[in-house]
Length: 214
Length: 305
Image 1 (cartoon, one colour):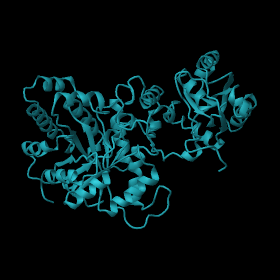
Image 2: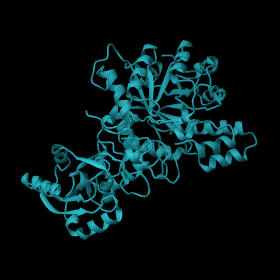
Image 3: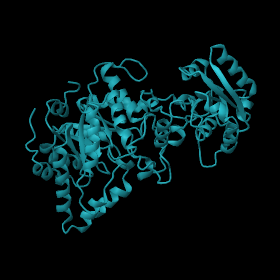
C-alpha cells in the first residue's frame, strides 16, 4: 500500500488561506491503513478546521481514492456540497488527489505527503501517477503531478519541447505542464505558477535509495 | 558589468549582436573546435559550445569553451539539467569562471531518448529556471544553493533559452517573464522559421516591457538539404519547420543556395522586429556558411567594443 504522512497543519493552513468553505475527503484504502486519512483522521481535521473558524461543508470517504470510478461516483453523490465549497482537502496519497482533480473543477488541496509505495502501487491503469517523492506539490500544479508525469521533473514548465500538448519523448504522451496550465486556467488559478519554487528536496524521496532515519 | 564579456558589452551598448554555435566533435580532437573558432571569430560576438546536444555524447562544453578562449573568442558555455546534479553544476560553474568563461546558457536539455544513450539515467535535479536563479545567487550573493559562502567573485552573464513555437503559445511569454525574474540577462530563442509567429510573440513580449529587461537574440538555423529540414522537423525537440520551408527545399535545384536564401530572408525580417537585440545562428553541421550569412545580412564588420 502507499504510505502517507499528514502534512504539517501550518502547511495545510497556508493552502487554505483565504478560503472558508472546505469539503473534506478521506480514503478507506491505504490512508486509513496508515491512519492519515481514515474516518477518525477526517473527523479530527473537521474539528481542527472548525476550531479556527473554517466551515466544513461536508465530508466523505472514498473506498479507494486511486480508483477513478469510485472517486467519481463518491464525489458525485456529494456534488451539491462540493459545488458550494471553496475547495476540497483530501487526506490520501497523491494518486487520490489526482483522481479527484480529474473529475472535479475545484481546487483540491493535498493533505498528505506520499512517502513510499511500500511494495504495492496504487491503482491507476494508464501509468504512474505518484512517485512517492515525499514532498507533495500538487497544491501548486492543479492536482497534476509533474514529478510523475513530466519526463524531466520540471517544476517551472513546460520545457521547449512541449508541442501540441504532447511531450517531446512520445507523440502519445501528454505534456504534464500543458495539462497543468489548462487546468489552472480553467480554475482561474494560473497565478499559482507565478512564484519561483526552490529546488526540490530529493532526500525525502526514494530516488536515492531505501528509506532511512533522517 | 556583470561579467564584462564581449557579448555583454555588445548587448549593453545597444548593438545588434551576432552569436553562433561551435558544435564540439564526437571525439577528443581539439582542432575541430579550434577550426570553427578561427572561422567564426571575425563574424560573431560570442560562440556557444553545446552541451551534449540532443543527448548525443560530444566533447564537453567547458573544454570547447576553453579552446575558444585560447583563440581570443568569447565563449558561451551551455549547461543542461539532464546530466548533472546541483553539486556538479555549481562545481562546473566555479571551474568555468576560473577558466575565464563568463557567459552561461541554462537549459533543460533534450531528453535522453533522443540520443545515442537512451538508457542513461536522466538527472534533472534542477530545472532551467532554478538553474538561472542559482547562477544569479552565486553571482550576486556569492552563496551556494546551500546558503554557504563562495569564496571570491563569480562574475556571470546569465542566459536562458525560450521557444516561442512551443505550446501553450500564450504561456510562453509568462515563462519568459519567469526566467527574467529568476535572473536571465540574455535569451537565445529556438530557431525561427515562421517569422509571423515570432513577431506575434515579440509583440506580446514588448507589450509587457520584457524586451527592456532582457536581451533577446533570435535563433536562426540555415538548412542545407531537404533531408535536414525533414530531420529537424521530425526528430529534434522544440524545432518547428513549416511545410512551406520543407517544400521550398524539396523543389530547389541548388539546396544550399535556397537554404542560404531562406536564412537571409528570415534574418532581414527579424531585424525589423522591435525588441530583438541580435541573432543566434545555429548552423549545425554547416558552420562554413556562417561568414557568408553574416556578410550578406549586412552585419559585417562586427563592431569593436
